[in-house]
Image (cartoon, rainbow, N blue to C red; front, side, top):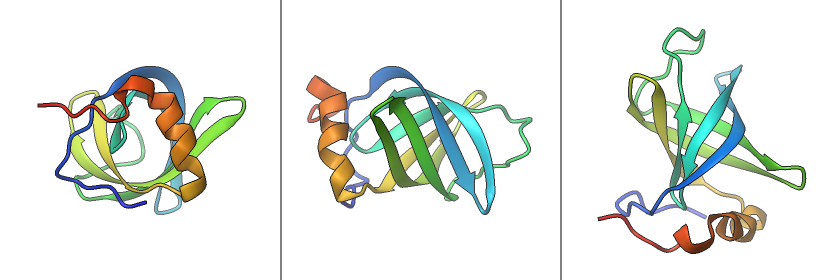
Length: 111
């Protein structure tokens, strides 16, 4: 599935971990929130991996014992303590479990 980058879906706060991989380097980050179109991760600027807007990354989001979400994402926003990423591709077999995780947030759009 390809995500429409012009729509900003409602975000659901969650507590989870995420493995971010960029050009062969990886780091474990904490998930702050997730939506149908992207994710916000805690980010320490002093980490060995330097991120910039437009960077392509692969994310392995660990949601529970039964479900991990593997997606391709692009860095869209860098803040002092976090990084916003837009999902570029969500595998078909992961779409329904993601929608179930998002629950009532899945089709709400932020204004």
